[in-house]
Image (cartoon, rainbow over all chains, first blue to last red; front, side, top):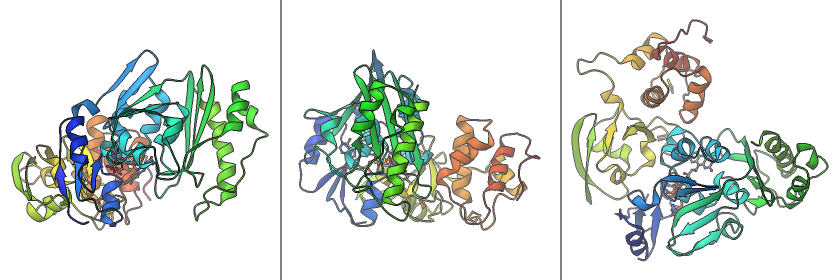
Length: 261
Length: 161
Ligand SMILES: Cc1cc2nc3c(=O)[nH]c(=O)nc-3n(C[C@H](O)[C@H](O)[C@H](O)COP(=O)(O)OP(=O)(O)OC[C@H]3O[C@@H](n4cnc5c(N)ncnc54)[C@H](O)[C@@H]3O)c2cc1C
Ligand code: FES
Ligand code: FES
């Protein structure tokens, strides 16, 4: 890993100022960024640690809204997001305990790995990504593999989840990486059902519209029995073919509907 | 270079580090605490697990600068001052929980983190908690058995392959 300057501001304002310099990059838990830098796939001149920013900490529930600070770790969400059990369970199954003790929600969403869990949760929950500059609806946030609506130097300060009436995340684990081979987050809201799929598409996380329509009419696993996804555009690799992944999306969606609480 | 100060196994420690210095490198190369092993250096194997403010972390995937001001615990601090093993270490010895021993520091530190939060884990709890700790020798059964035994549970019925 190439050397870099390290800075640890204690407020969002100072973090944004520190990120304004050339080739500066935010450091969340480092569980993606440090391995990437070791491989020299990233070589920022400066890392701005967000771990000392108190306003980006904390999980709070108010009415039907759960707010998670941008620097909150996966382990903290697992332990503290009891107002949204499906989200807490999802966070509690990311990677392994040591990864969960460091990795953060802000880092996971900003990274938008095509097999990551949080993007599916945010999209299915119709979450709002709050940054230092604006609020971005999850539907506008994810813009394809490793791409998001974030501008250069913009940081996720919190994420707001509207707690659904019922929800479940079903993850088919790729056992070597512990990421999702396919993961489906189903959330039943007052105004309809949302189905978000990770791990499957070459475009990254996506909503499965046909399944949403069928499940909004009848929230039962059988309601999607006749549906199938087109395998073209799916990820195909040594862990699973395009056809396998397309099939798995249907299976995991049915399981999620059956398990939704 | 920045100066970092932390408490390591109850003793104050400090040093000058670069931005890129990993906690694992600081512990091993600057403090000489080579019990923390670096197996993969790619965040996969868990041989480098230490506790930072009571939480298990992979020290190869944390900057030393991020641990400034923290309480760090490593394998060197697990035995008593007179060298007598703690309950987890003794159980690993008793139940043959190691062969080459390379993964053992990380296994013991992960086990200690688990038992702090969950003093009487089920076998399933132990296996899930060790998701990020790889062992190339033992086949895991005796590691799980050791940790169950360290928690004071009867392990006579557990698999012994
Ligand atoms: C062994 C292992 C297993 C894993 N398994 C899984 C898994 O099963 N599922 C899963 O989803 N993930 C998994 N991960 C990834 C993990 O969840 C990471 O924690 C996460 O992807 C990145 O979060 P971070 O806080 O570590 O971010 P970092 O690595 O610090 O940063 C990642 C990117 O986000 C940017 N960034 C960080 N914080 C912010 C912020 N607040 N605002 C804007 N940009 C920011 C950084 O600049 C960088 O570009 C795994 C990782 C490892 C090492
Ligand atoms: S050396 Fe840190 S996880 Fe393998
Ligand atoms: S005892 Fe050899 S790697 Fe675990």
